Length: 392
Image (cartoon, rainbow, N blue to C red; front, side, top):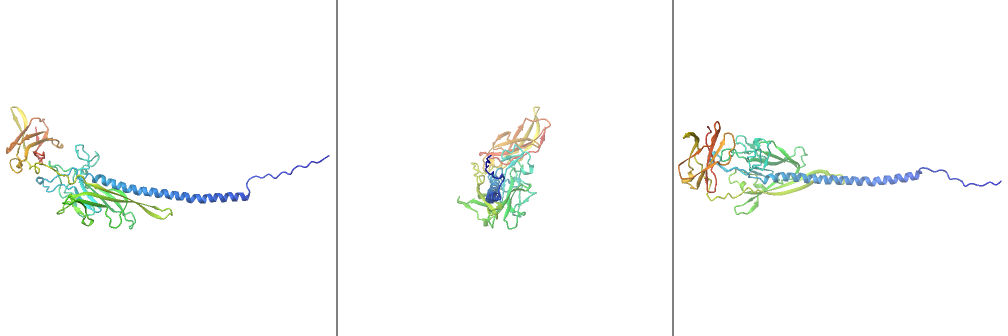
């Protein structure tokens, strides 16, 4: 019998040795040690990009809001009318200040009959769509000065549709005192004050608004900050000579550097707005606006069994004398309480001392008011003179 030898079997080995575990753990820790700072840096970089974008958007939005409305300065403002007790034109620029600007324009209407308005909003309050009443003035921003000085009206006696818009900046009371952060505000007439933008940085004596004006020589020159503020009613005021407004907005976002240190990111947007409606030449070949005719009187008369309203008025002083440029009289009519619309008729000038016009299109029970204005060869109208109401 012969014994055969078998090779020895190696012991069964499963799992990892301690050395292998230590090696894999070391590698894993190394990967995390490299990855965490990398992703942290990427996150901070993203936060910086967001901060810069936020600062840029703040500056851009503030600039766009002001620029959009500044471009409409002067729409719908009314000329002086001594007969209505208004000795000066409704101003286009009311206040030019380093940190505030106030102007008049027909910006918004809640009535589709206001064809000059820039925007239409049927929900806006009535008092925010017309000029303010001098009996309820407001204090201008950054000033103790009150406005308006007169209730500016159209030539038919109705209140001007050009409202007063103010933009200004003031220190942000919620920010640290040394942060130089400001808030941009907006107000229409005596309406509520609204926030346009926060996070605006103004350092030192840096003006928020700068102005340029046209000199008598025709040259455009900047207005020194030391010459501001300028108001509409100053003796020798240069408000109507202002042609551009420059706006510089510094948007700020408080964030952190890549080294996790606090830092304010600032982005600047600057623009220059041309005031296209200021300085427009009112050309006329017939001189000044014609003087008003006399106030009309109306009476209900019956001629040959036909009822009619008979309106009479005295001629304008500019027809037979003065500038002698009145060519006709335009006649208006409205139902009492309705707005005035386009003229319904005209009467040619004949150098008469008085004129008469008859209205056959009358209705029983309806009250009408009539108006008349002198018209020259421009053609430009005088102020409308309105009759008392009359009912058929």
